[in-house]
Amino acid sequence: MNELSSNTVENITKHFVNQTGNISKSISEIEQAMQQQAGDSSESLEDMDNLSEEIGRVYNIIKEVNLLIFDTNSNIDKNIIIIDDLRTKAIATNKITIHLINDIETTDKLYVTRSKE
Image (cartoon, rainbow, N blue to C red; front, side, top):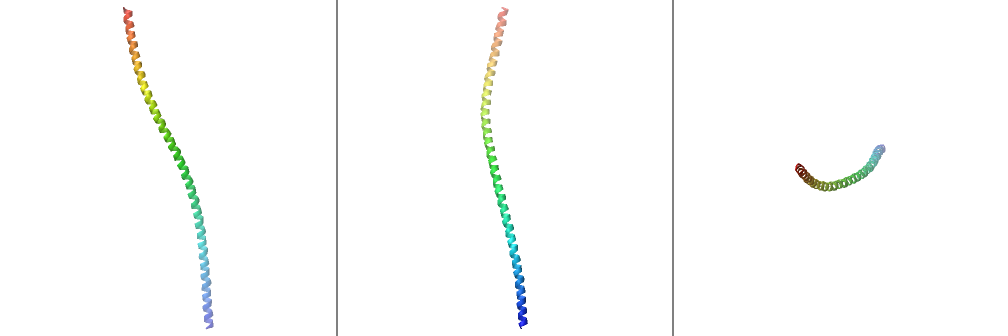
């Protein structure tokens, strides 16, 4: 019976040592996975930080573009007013020119008529 007991104890001890090795291996694998996950998390945080900076740069560019659009619209409005003023003055200049041409023609006709007399 002693031999049976010692064989049983030996088998239990071998099984215990084997299971302890399996547990150690599992703990090692978990530790490696945790290190990998920590590295991945750190990398993700760095990527998010870079993305945040890029979004900030894009926002600033959009802000500048919006200011340029506002300035352009303001200049267009001012130029429309100037062009309308120039159109009005061109019409007035054209009327004066027509009036002067008519006066010159009338004067010329009077001059021709008087010189024939």
